[in-house]
Image (cartoon, rainbow, N blue to C red; front, side, top):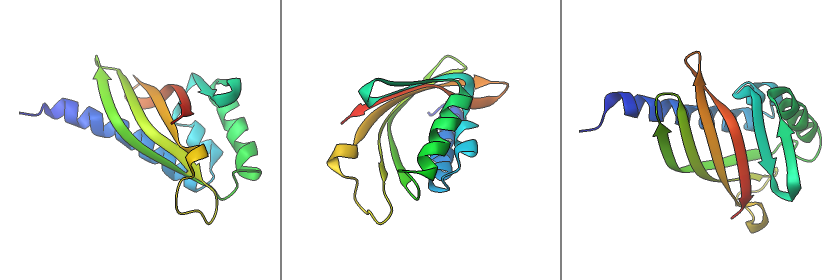
Length: 133
């Protein structure tokens, strides 16, 4: 028998990733960053490091106005683990498509790890890291 609370929590965590994909599709850095904790960390290939929701927002706003304008994100959770009451770890296959692309190019295929925490009843990304898949 599936634990109803675990199922609801799993769904809520997956909803955060769906909201992030939707915000990216809208190229909406504000909506994207709103899903992160105030002190979130983001580690990207090439040694890129961002700390804090505002820094994530600023980075994406610049990217959406420039090289990622019109892009969409791909994110397919492979594993969702709920740890305790307020922590979740998600491993996903991810990447982004530039305008007009239908298939994710190999050089932009990523495997990502997301750590989410529940604060005041809301799930938010506390840490994100990806590497080439």
